[in-house]
Length: 199
Figure 1 (cartoon, one colour):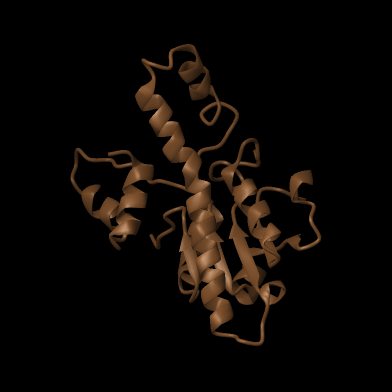
Figure 2: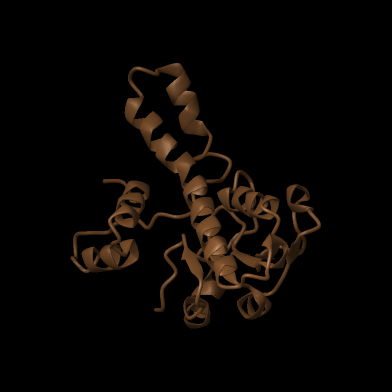
């Protein structure tokens, strides 16, 4: 079973996928990869489609793998929508514009500044399009990319985001987030799409 499928199945049957992976990886010959918010970058997210286009009948598994990975951002967005709805249900006087969602990590993999084909960027943009306030937290960039230049998205520090946001969406497992895992994971409303855990 592939990591993205494992996450979706575990979520469906209410099993903590991160605990499952941690326990399985205690075996000396097991090293299950951790699923994330999706697959990005200039190669892995794009190149398999060239193979599928060239040999569609022979590349059925590659097609299915890409379809599962391409679905992951939608899954994360649905989790965020549910968390926002829960937040608003607890505050009857508030509206969508009052809700602050912190998006932790924008790059396509940890500890780099590359945003190419990053699912986290697309998820962040879609969260902003819901009408809430978005606090983007990306320690490896100085300013937001053009496609996130919306009036309701601001680049903030991790500390500000933890303090101000009603919902945390953890999308990239940056080293600085791992170092602050205790503070992040103590937040009352979080979506942990990156498998962040205390070490």
